[in-house]
Length: 343
Image (cartoon, rainbow, N blue to C red; front, side, top):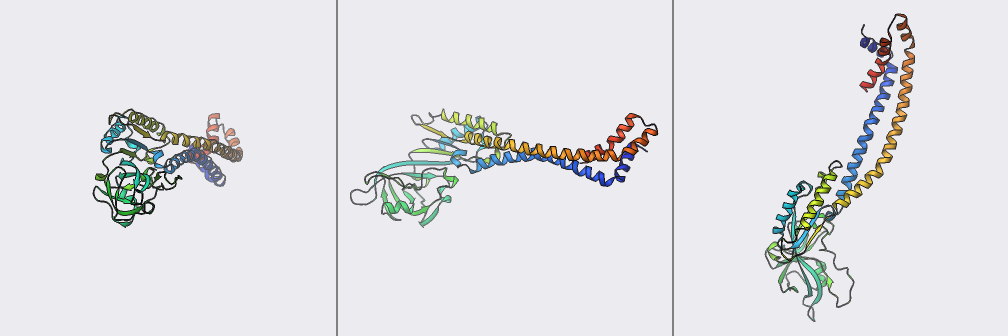
């Protein structure tokens, strides 16, 4: 009879003890595998939580410069391609803002002093709630918030003359969620909170217009982050590419001659935060895994020792029958090795 066949018959003969050894060995292997797997999964979860819960203007990238945002988009796409960072961001959101400040409204004495913005943002009308009237369709039409209308004593259907000299018809009233990631934390809403004297210009909510209605001011290209693209294994690579893209765009302020440029991103800082959280988790996980492995190893040692002692008479019989040391060693290790390998 071969040694393997003999070992299998012995396993069946001592099936209760063999099952105990196999169960303990399986637990040891499971702990050894699950510990690092859990540690890696926890790090991935921490990274995704940091990126997904961060405000969009921090995790993404914002490029602002005077001019048509369609022209700026070419420079942004070129920078993304040259630095292999296309996969890090979602499709760009284009916007244009025209700031104004001065008297507005029909109040006696020339109106109310305000500061605000006339805004076009691609897809904006899908992210607001229309409360009255309709959405603007052509140049010279805007929607305003109820707060804005109340402050200037205005109404839907009223024609306004902005401090810039532009004439706008208020065709609707809207509300929007300021914390919607789509807005990239631009200061469009909730502006009527700044204290000031009776003659101090008051910041007001943005007037939203169609693209044809905003032809001056700064262009904006917002790039929301694609969190699913970032993993622990490639975070450092994306960090370098995002920084290189930001640096390249920051050096391209001559796209529109004489205009300033602003490039904003906190992606590297978010990765640093995630890394610190991962390191804080790493030591406790390692200690827990080591403790479990040590405990399981002790139990496994006891079970294997009991199995070896149970084989004492068989080993003695083999010696009497003239078995060589190599055969005795193989006979003694066959069962434990089979069980641990199976586990």
